[in-house]
Length: 424
Image (cartoon, rainbow, N blue to C red; front, side, top):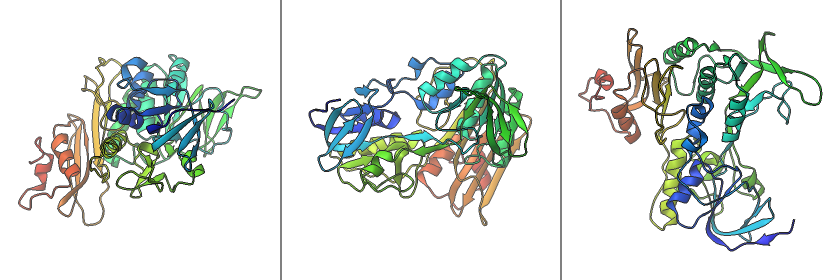
């Protein structure tokens, strides 16, 4: 295909996910190169689409000019241009990498570069729609991975009428966000929806049919036990997409390394969102991606701004299958949809580090009758983290105190942290 050179744009963004779309909405005249055929959408709400609660157009983000279905294949830093798979070449004054992340495909026996029929990642809208088309009442589905994504997928599949098994290698669900007690309550809620939960459960491989088009039939565990499966969902985490940056000679560690101005090792190239590593951290969170895009928009407009890291709240709402659907709320947090709780549902929030270290103070309140649980960890005179389950009345003030990193007044009783007003 003949290469055609296009006019140089002041700002070119590679990636039309939440970070790229946010930047396009904040900076005039941005050229966005998007690999997906869909218009930008709110990835946080994919589980709601899988459950059939929302149609894809409901989760669309505000319109942005995007070159859809075009993949950037090479960055020519010397000439400051991007070469694309359709033969086009786009010049830039400033380039922004918002390439996001890829789902982790675990090293399982029977899982090659081409996924067997019935095996689904759960990262993009196309993944979600393919999975939704495959689900029918009574189908046997195994979700591998008990993090936020796996929990959301398992709940959505159960709402579709599937017989769901959730296999988690760790000791409890959502280990990054929850302590053992809150994870136990989450497990009970999923089991009440009909989800069979296995923790400390290592998956060894997939048993598939033979032939030219193998299809999954079971998930094999390390102890030799098999879980029958017509559908298998891989929810084993994500990995930053750094291939373009590496090939261009940019500094890459876990992600594309950026400074407080979100610049890479090339001053004309920035990175935001899931692909970016700031101060040793790859966030992989919607809240961080949006905050980084906002900071970069200020910098590209010539205004002073600095990114100092993100202290993000993770919030998850699960409802019973009989719950009434609610309109989506724009996500500034991470995880599944943040919507008003309905009868029979569950609401939880987590922030910071809820796992105490030696010398920390831990304050915990539990109400088994109401199904409510709250715990916070205090480290020195600061709030280190916490988990609220069921009753989130105190979450606003607690999260603000943690996000602002404010000291806790010396004369305050630590129990006041878990009152409805957070003690402030």
